[in-house]
Amino acid sequence: MYPERLGHAPAERAVTVHQPQPLTAYDPGPSTAMGPYAERQPVVWVPDAYGRMVPMPKHLAPAPVLAPEPRDLTPLPLLDPIAQRLMGAGIGGGALSAGVGYGVGEVINAAAGISGGALVWVAVIVLALRTPARAITSGKGSTVNIRKAVIKRSHFHG
Image 1: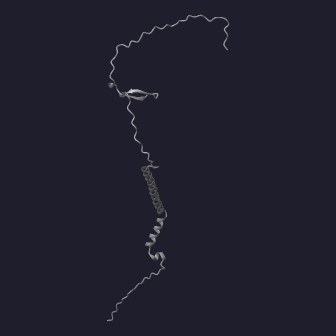
Image 2: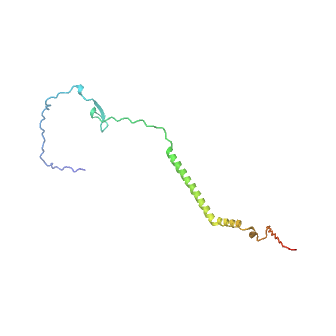
Image 3: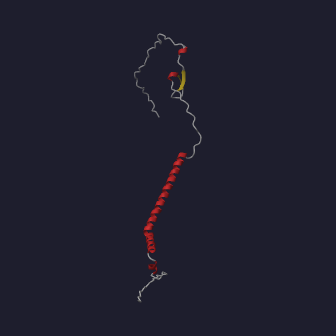
C-alpha cells in the first residue's frame, strides 16, 4: 500500500527546539485582612445552565419561583349554561320569525284570493240583497197588491 523506501535517506532539515523560560515563584503580595465568619453573606445553591448546583450569594440569587395556586378540577358541563341560553334564544327567535313570516304570507295569500274571486261573490251577494224580490222571481211571487177604490157620487134629488 505504501511505497517502500528504496535506500535514500529523507532530507535533513533544521529543527528548532523551544526552550521555555523557567518560572519564578508566585509572590502573593501583601496579605489582605479576611473578614470574620459572622460577616459572610449567606450562600444558596442554585442550578446552573447545565443542571449542576452551584453556590451563589443569597443577595445575588434569582427570586424563588412561587408555587401556583391549586386549580379547580371539578368537571365542567358539556355546554356552557350561557351558551345554552343564547342558543335557545336563537332557536326561539328563529322559530318566532318563521311563524311571523308564515302568518304574514297567509294574510297576503288571503288578500290575493279575495281580490281574485271572493270579491266577485261578495258583489253578487250584495246585489242579490238589494234587488227587490219580484225582480228576482220575475213577477210570479206571492205578493198581493190590493187596490181599493172608493167612488163617491153625489146625487142631488131635490
